[in-house]
Length: 612
Image 1 (cartoon, rainbow, N blue to C red):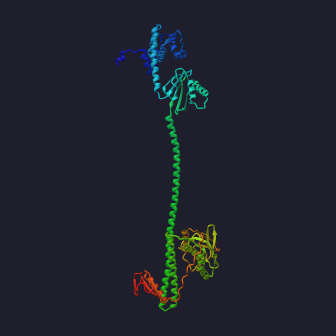
Image 2: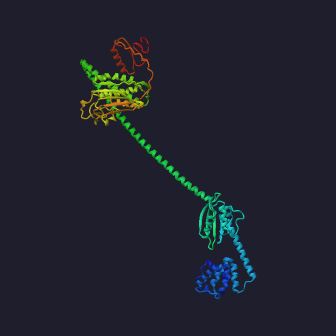
């Protein structure tokens, strides 16, 4: 602080302080104070440095600020002297400008040594500024070129030369920029088929109009250059050339990543959509399977209920007949006892048929039954079936007609016979009068075996259910489900219990036929209308005819007199063994009974071959 108080500030120090601290309001009056310098002197001093036009602009500013005309002999205001010195300081340096103003105040003419000293100091500063500018330009990572108002090259840097691969002596100060443009065009920088003069003139017009521009150019070397042109206030252009190859590669990579990302998103979306659809389809299939499982469980429960119901019925009937026969035998009512015995036999026969049918269904459902497919003539199978069922048809007053076929088929003989047995049995069972027809139709590479009847027909709503277990139909009339029947049987509308058949059947024949056909992969079907009969059919693949085989020898029928023949009867069930022994003894056989082959009987070892 003491140094600041003791040292007297010079005018230069005050100007520099005013550049950073606003003191114009405090010294507004002092700035307008007139100095000993004349306007003509000041103009003569400044004109060589700033030029006539720039001098007129500066001096007009002085007159506006002083609000009066400043003539050549008028004194120069203090502020004008200060601003003139500041203008000169920007050109020749602050120290040199201060010396010039001091010489002007001293009213001493410029001597040769003064001019040399001023010029030498100014040249040194200009060289320093030029070297500093050149160093700065060279260290910039961009190519730089500067052209003046006459479109001549005045400055450039090494990066500019390297980018365009200019020859060593091509560039010099004052080189017309048109020469550089023509060199670039001849080396293919503006395209292979470009018109050189047109391209050069277009770029010169851009510089002449002095408008800023920016564009990108790919050089023959593959380098991508961003060109930015900026006009200078006094004319001319500064152009920068930036290598943006890495930036453009990064942008292209980002664009490619964006495009591939969109493709991947679309692909993943499609995969996700497909996965969702597959999952929905899987859920639907699971729902269907679960529904089928529930249906199978319910059907199995109903099946067991129906089985127990229908199996207990004949057994209970047999027990009742046995009790009745015991009472009648105790009273010596032998005729009535024999009738009860017949009823017992019928009831047990029904139970045996039901158990046999259930065993057959169980074998078909277990999946362990494998069809034994073979080639055989269909006529042999149908002939045997016709012979078997003609007697049943005749006993019921029906006509069984049969159209023979000589064609061969490929199937399992026993399973196909069982299916056709069920078709014929149902046809004879439900036909009260008329006829039953067994025939064959050719359907391309298959044979369709048909069983027609003239029965009451089957209603459309019942045709889908007749292949279920324990479904029985009334032999006459339209069909509807009897609501009170646990077995889901069908009866005629308006029929009474007396109209229903005494021989109800088991309700398992068509269920067995359907399972057998599915195992053989033979389609079965039914066509019917109420009152017009029904037609059941199955399609069997055609087979290849084989040479005729010799007929097998027929077994000799034993004579009617069987008394005295020895019979070995083996069974592990005591009650069955006793019943069979009693029956055979009644027929006159000599029976040896045993629980197994190793057991002895009163007559000796059962496994002995003596007397056999």
